[in-house]
Length: 358
Image (tube, rainbow, N blue to C red; front, side, top):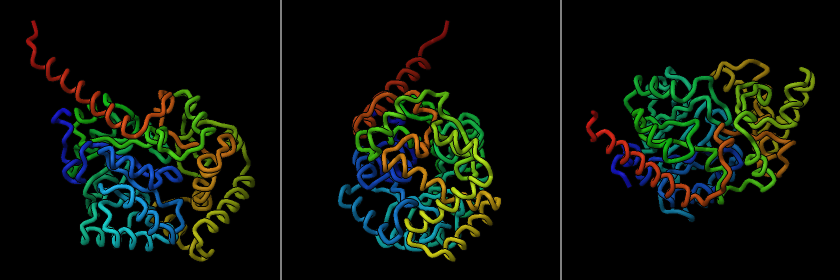
């Protein structure tokens, strides 16, 4: 392994390779997280789609499958967030990641307990605010990333974030191989974060029918829509997305109410609790009423594809890199290939830089 691959991120997280497996709802299971950690990367468990009473057990399952450091991702304004925070602290999880609606009280408790705080941001000002709140590492996700995303490409977002903060910065959005890791390090980042690439591995729990739809997608099939939950979200274009985009306001309201009821069943939260959570998220994220009402759509519609195996009836969150991927390696083979390719690329650059120009 090239020595440049050992970055500040490796030291902070106690990992061998500066790669983060992001938390994808319904996908980042204990098995995928443990495989990522055992391969030398840092895996993050997605808890937004786990009932709060089951988060403790999911964390314990990761600990049974790996003795390496791992992280837990959660939405701080979601119903049951306090239970998730308690589980993170009780199990002494290495890191907590979050995005929308950061809460100072949770972050301070994590800081006091030595849990690293690693938020994902999509704008330089959000990176600065996150550091003010106590972030130890920043994941800067560009527009190429899957799921909720911004509009600025990674190549433009990353240097802006690097200029604004001094904590380690991890580049996300558009990464899937060793060349990307070498490029991110050249920008000044301390590593990369990948979601879609890990989704398309042997340890991913996604059903074959849905994986086939990912493999069949071209780069042009993967674009941003606001019709899933009112926020920009990068997905694979399919029959459901077309129906959502062509639907009326009344149809959107009916679907939002159905999703809210399904989300209530998933989380076990009462209607007043869901309402308080929605209002808190609306305040922290400056959401419109429509966006607040549609918030439950994403996890429920994603489940239809990612768990139940109906890719044309559910939402397929995806980074644009899915249009380039056609293989399903084990996580270990993926990480080993990234390390080899990045090391070769860095060595070639050194050799090129050391040669004289005529």
